[in-house]
Amino acid sequence: MKNQQPHLIKRYLLLALGLAVMAFGVAFSIKGALGTSPISSAPYVVSLFTPLTVGTATICMHCLFILLQIILLRRDYDPVQLMQLPVALVFGWLCDLGVWAIQGLECPLYWQKWIFCILGIVLVAFGVSCEVVANVVTLAGEGLILAISRVAHTKFPPTKVAFDVTLVIIACVLSFLFLGRLEGVREGTVAAAVCVGLVSKQINKPLRRFEARFLSD
Image (cartoon, rainbow, N blue to C red):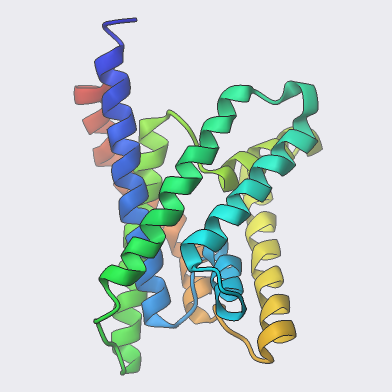
């Protein structure tokens, strides 16, 4: 156990790095105003018609995801997954920090918005890769997808697609219902849905080599 502790600490540090980078990716996608990633679309829309910040809305959403996991899995729910709660708190705070840190940046032209959007996609993909390679705890969204897959006996990829589409639909409904217009869902949302996974797979390769060298037990 003592020999494994340093490796565990390194894995949590890698997770923390991933959360920070991912949060800034969310911030850049918001700043680009071409639509956020599917997982961030609903919290962003909620932040537009409530006093909640994007980060606080994200925390609330993740808490709901954790509750749904418990309801779906019942006795099969592993209490260790409650670690998703502090991770959600940290991630939400980092999202607000990211939005605050880049608030002075401007991108009035359409091509500039795409630069911010692409940067957001790359940063989110890097964060996801760090989370996967760290392999200590997942974000609540992925935890819920795994729970749905387990209960419904479906594979993870199609379940994730259905989950992302559902979140985007919810964001659209909330947007039209409370704002009277579409916000948070645009061409950048589609780009993020398609590209984050592809970019993450490419980043996974060097990160796996890093894992083998520095994080192996």
